[in-house]
Amino acid sequence: MNDLCRKSAVELAGLISRREASPVEVLEVYLEMIKKLNPRLNAVVTLEEEKALDAAREAEKELAGEGNGPLHGVPVAIKDNVYTAGIRTTCGSMMMENYVPEQDAVLVERLKKAGAIVLGKTNLPEFGLIPVTDNLLFGPTRNPWNLEKTSGGSSGGSAAGIACGMFPLASGNDGGGSIRIPASLCGIYGIKPSFGRVPIHPRFPGWETMNHEGPLTRTVEDAALMLQVMAGAHRGDRMSLPQGDHNYLDALKRGVKGLRMAFSPDLGYAVVDPEVKKITARAAGAFEELGCEVEEIDPGLFSMEEDLQVMIISETMAKMEEDMDEWKEKAYPPYQVFMQMADSISGKDLARVQMRREELWSKARLIWEKYDLLLTPSTAVPAFTSGEGGPIGPETINGQPVGPVSWIAFTFPFNFTGQPAASIPCGFTEEGLPVGLQVIGDRFDEHTVLAASAAFEKIRPWSDHWPQL
Image 1: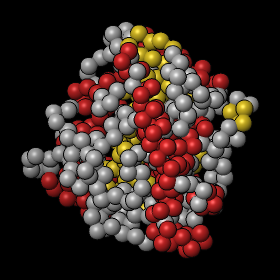
Image 2: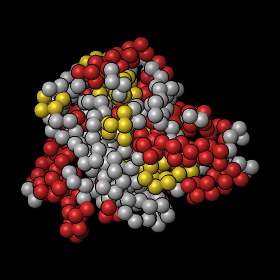
Image 3: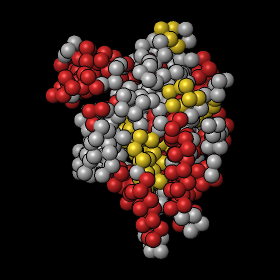
Image 4: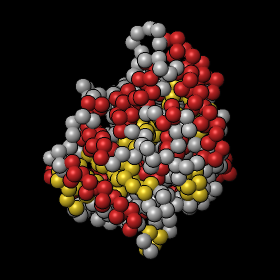
């Protein structure tokens, strides 16, 4: 692997600004990596080589001027359900195979303004509805640690590409865990910021009260910088939050001594793989080395797995109603179950979801009255065999029968509450598969999540671990 591919985005930006590497040189290295590894991983579904090279050449010329952005000349990959002007955006669906937006999403516009170079789009499950990355248009994205395993989802293409050095930065979005799940399974860092922190405009219909846009990176510093660039209110997204004077890079210097941390291995209801439980418990305990108080708790929460399914199915069926006959012929096979369940969902069912959501928050908020952070496993299991229309989750965990999305029981509660949460690489199973520790912060408190992530990264570094492709 070329040494440039092992550099963080912050390091690359420094090399470029000091003219120790050129934007074209950096881009060409990543393009070479994509051409070498993508046939095996299937992480990038649309590669814009010529457009990216043109942008890199322009960035090279602009180095002579002043006022270059913090990501000047650094390549970035964008998830394929995020608007990119002039670049195909399919949402992983045969229904949108040739759709090309006329404008950029706000986050893409801001990344470009900061100097980043969009090199292409990354794979996802059709419409981002399930936690494994597979679709009929492009096929599955493989896990770089074991090509027979899933990369997770729905931001699986972004996570897999980051994990093996195909690009240094990638965008993801998270409606039920879609940043944290693939980050955990692929052994990288991903943070879901507070709901509304990164504006979503223009947007595809659905997930309006659940989706969070955020970064996937190898290092916490890169994620903080990328979030700094993307965050801030925008008139196009009425739920977006003002940025104020937030500086996420400064948060990394805070330290965590004296913080009170709660650790829950199961949130009171989840079934967890014993190896995952052991690795994450050991990782949570590491914060004591940093001067934190760590206490194992039973938070008394309850599962909203069925509520998540009600929201996904009802919103998707409403979105596809006019094209349902065509979609039935083109949809990813497991989605046929969604179509069969749609007519059984009533307006009262949707109202109950919102009432249970409020009940969840009434219980969850009590945790942050006593603790600064909540620590949990990111996923209940490591990566498993999936793809080519295979299962979207294991049928059993620790010998117990479970539902198809029970393995993501730790992530989606915090989409319902809207809190910031990250997945930190914290170890490997005996089979050599990554395991993630989830760090959940109080409302609007990305700073403490990032500070804790950076502190853990310092004493348990992970960025030197690379899959042996």
